[in-house]
Image 1: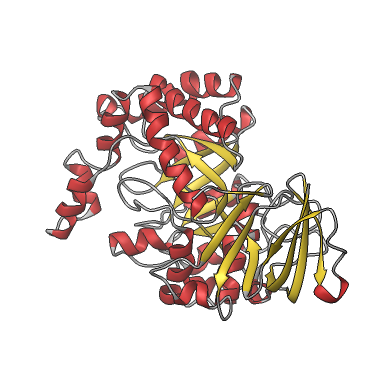
Image 2: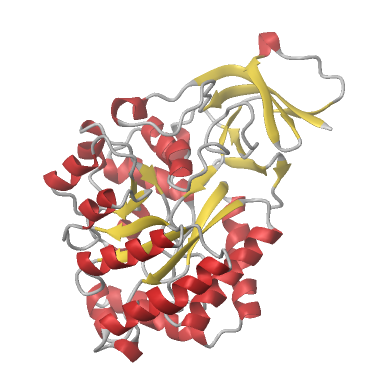
Length: 413
């Protein structure tokens, strides 16, 4: 049966013409219809408009949205949702004064997660991960990217990607998989980074490509992890196997990774807590999406991505959670949107654009989701009765969601 939402107080992110992403001044424009209706059939948006033009209700399942807003579900383009256990102990270590880098140098950080994941069965890893996925769906996420990178061995990386594949098969949410074998140098290769890179390129990557386990390839391009030269090596190898580049870059230091991303036509460059003028300049007029991860900055007490500077320079910007056990143990996109407004001085319009249409683009999904457009998936957030969409970031400690719909079906609470 077709579904008809009626009396929608405001229908947000209405795009009648195809659009991939918004940049610069366009990010402050959030098209909407007040007192609106929306129709859905077989999980697809089929129509919308003013209530004055609402179709007859016969034959529809009716949802009365009086006092409520409807907007596209969040598009979270950067997560590490598949992991084993947690790193609560490191959280306490940071409170006591140790830095993220010091914890990593003491055997914590990514290597700690890798050690746990390597001894966790695929079934147990799936069971842990599906709980997290169900939680973020309830919090409004309708499309998500999930990275490997906590395996750091051939078997464990493939295990992670198999778990992502199972999640994709068993849940209606759009899931994109990214191979992040170059997340850190494993302990076994502590003094032989070149050897590990060759393992990734010559052994792990061909198997992942042969089994179609990932769409994207990613690298942690950062001082103490992988250099620009290492990054180029990995991205070039990934492209040979049909994997589209993404990069973790400019989180703690700026070493030229943004330029590498542009050179290799990366779909996105993510983190960007430190942005130099030359980094902003090189991103202008490209198709590479900058992605900010404000809840990571919040959790680690590091600088926030300079959103105002980037948007005023004419760049687009996406927002994502970076959900992971070490630096962002939260997949709550509502908090991300709020933090972007509060700490990065983005307007609610800019933040919603960054978390919907631009986030969809950063996953290669802008033709499927991210806006209220006929023919796109009905991935929707129906809010509680609120004054305006400004209430979403304003009420940062409580989400304003009544019901989440993915492909037209309500997500169980």
